[in-house]
View 1 (cartoon, one colour):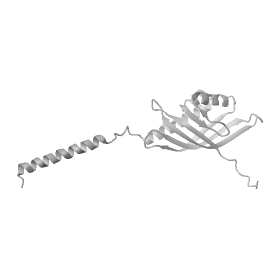
View 2 (cartoon, rainbow, N blue to C red; view 1 turned 90 degrees about the vertical axis):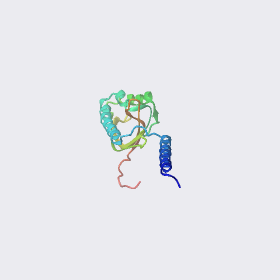
View 3 (cartoon, helix red, strand yellow; view 1 turned 135 degrees about the vertical axis):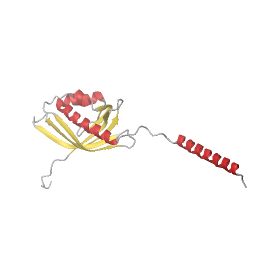
View 4 (tube, helix red, strand yellow; view 1 turned 120 degrees about the vertical axis):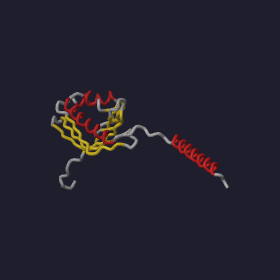
Length: 175
């Protein structure tokens, strides 16, 4: 049978050991990084989209290219993929040679990874350009997916862009 002082000492020792074990387990746990505020990231990407559409209307390729990360990849219909700032700028330099070139996009969904290091947006795009063969205006539209990554300084920039045209409406006539 234990005497009361010894029982108190064992209780104290047990408490110290439990606290030490808890502290050791806590120290082994990975520390979470800064909390990602998903709503803020979505708002930032949506606000950038508004600016991006204004930059498309400006006719200035440098303003458009600024929305892409340095090693971004663009995949467009009927063209080889384009990667990197210089190649993307060349793509828009060529597009803006057409005085009727106009491009716009509207996202309908933006998701942010739980890790906070990637976001994806999907939506619709439209483009007007001149057909080099006929001289007629061509209006194209479709769907897009863009993947964003935060860059140094905190700005979210596109790292991958994929555009898919919407097929023309069916005439209902058999082919």
